[in-house]
Image (cartoon, rainbow, N blue to C red; front, side, top):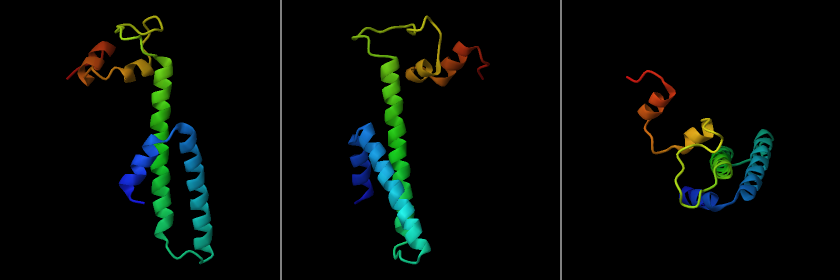
Length: 116
C-alpha cells in the first residue's frame, strides 16, 4: 500500500478503528522483532515501516481525540457567536486553543506579557 493511500485510509477511520489498527501494528512490530532475533525475517525494513505506520496512526488518533474533546467542551452555539467562555469568563487551555483567529501577539497582550 502506498503512503498516500495509507494516510487517506487512516484519516477516515473512527477512534475505535484507529485503536484497533494501532494494536494490530504493535503486534506486527513485536512479531517482526522476534522473527528478526531468530533469523527468520528476510525483510528487515518491514519493522521500521510498521513503526512509522504506528506513529502515523497514533498521530491521527490523538488529533481526533483532541477534536472530540474540544467539541464536547464547546458545542456549537447554533450559529451565534459567543465572546465569553461558558465557564464564567475563565480562560482555559481549551478556549485558548479554540481561538484560532487571534495572532500570537494578541494572545500575549491578553495575558499581559511583554510584546516585542
